[in-house]
Image 1 (spheres, helix red, strand yellow):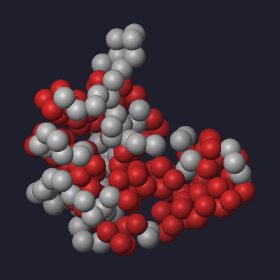
Image 2: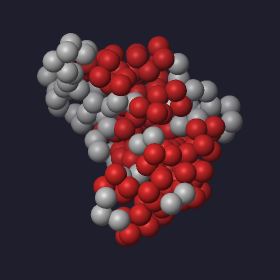
Image 3: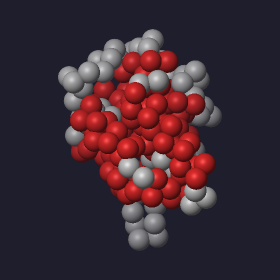
Length: 192
């Protein structure tokens, strides 16, 4: 699932783990580096991120987040795709993404914005963040479910795994409990 070509957090998921070495933006924010002091982004913070992404798409004639024929705007569509993690994205992540989109050159993949946001919160500890216990448990559950089921609704939790480091601690703890459940219940538990 490609998150940011329409969904800030969903794209973060995949890019944070797979594309951590491809920064396209130089984000100068320092980030908190994690911990209980991380604050969740507000609805207006998330709207600002989506607005920045949509503005970049218009400015650069990039593939659009689109919207429905019912008149859903790019920003509304972006916010709608955040799903159950909407109120759990870290504020420093949201600010880093918005800053990156505001300065992102045309013709450059927006995957680098995710990478910049991820690096802003973990600094040089990329390996440690990717191998955090909740991420490792999620990835292990994903592999176990893929091995025992052909139902993609059961085996699509890897998106959740990738986004975990970008969420506030409370949401990470809540989602981590889902990985102890049977495969048939994980998707519903995570809200994925």
